Amino acid sequence: MIRIAIDGPGGAGKSSVAKAVARKMGIIYVDTGALYRSIGLFMLNCGINPKDSEAVVGALNSFTLELTFVDGKQTVLLNGEDVGDRIRTPEVSMAASAVSAIKEVREYLLDTQRDIAMRNSVIMDGRDIGTVILPYAEVKIFLTASPEARAKRRYLELTAKGQEVSYDEVYREMVERDTNDSTRDIAPCVPAEDAILLDNSELDLEGTAAAILKIVKKKAKKRTFYQKAHKILAPIIRFFQRVKVTGLENIPKDGPVLFCANHMAIRDPILIAAACKRQITFVAKKELFRVPVIGWLVKKLGAIPVDRGNANTGTIKASVNVLKRGGAIAIFPQGHRYPAVNPAETPIKNGAAMLTYRSRCDVIPVCIKTKNFKYSFLRRKEIIFGKPIPYSAFGFTNGGSEEYKDAANRIFAEVIRLGGFDALPAPGQDEDGEKK
Image (cartoon, rainbow, N blue to C red):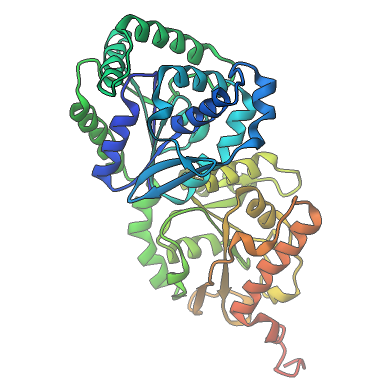
């Protein structure tokens, strides 16, 4: 899965080139500007000044806005009606610039845009995609051109549609909008720190699309340390650790997912990673990061440190960010290792449930199973991936400790069910619970 963010000023050709790249790559194009334009159009139709933030915010619940995709093509429905080209006039452009500077409007649309990118390969264009909407996009491009070149393009586009405008009028409005968009306090139109600057003043549509595809191809070739290490080490680990893997068909190929497993030994993360083809980010205790060699390795593998004695707001935020960009996180609800102890008899923590609620992701229960709940070098280990538990199944309303507790219990109950741990005797006992 890949997310491509294209930012830049009006008239740079973002929408046209994004559509062209989406067609060539076979991914979804999301025209975020059309959403703001639709809100601007609604305000104008209602006689509301788009610069009157109080009136605009008060009207946000007065309409419905929906994105639909058919064969990768986006349609914006305002109150159930296709807005078509009515959102492409200079007047609506200025209204869109005004409403997009209002914090509440951006928050109103934020989840809609992110949810699409969480579950699909997308290309989005706008003015703050790489900085705000998709800060973790794999490819970020800031597309720009001289004001004269951009004004000429917009003028030709509008006159081709039969609109009576002058070049000077279009140029003035473009410069004004550039100033408004780049200097506003909320999500200004500026390049992300890691964005690639592409000036297409001298390029046509095909040339710009070709340049972007070249950038995407170059990014895709850069394999991560995790991918390289996994390709070499995973088969070796599975062989020498005698790992049997079941349930791989339950793992989605892309999109956000939280793996929740029982925890017996320090090697658990290694065995789960070796069993799964997807790249997994593990939440690991901070002490590991200070261990020679191991500390270097967990850092290279992108693990997130956790301090088991504190609130760990940074850990939660980092984990949620990974999930919101469509990644996979693995966590152990028990909180720490319980070697030689039946998992059904151990306490669990609410961290996994909190991550699920905040990221709105599905959960895959994972059972690590071995004889007597304890590892030995030649003992067979089984990694069982259960069917995903959809986010909707948890019935979250407002979060909170009670909801987190119920969700955590549900998750770990499924882990226990996968291994049949609730029907197993404790270590050192026979089937009747008597000491051997």
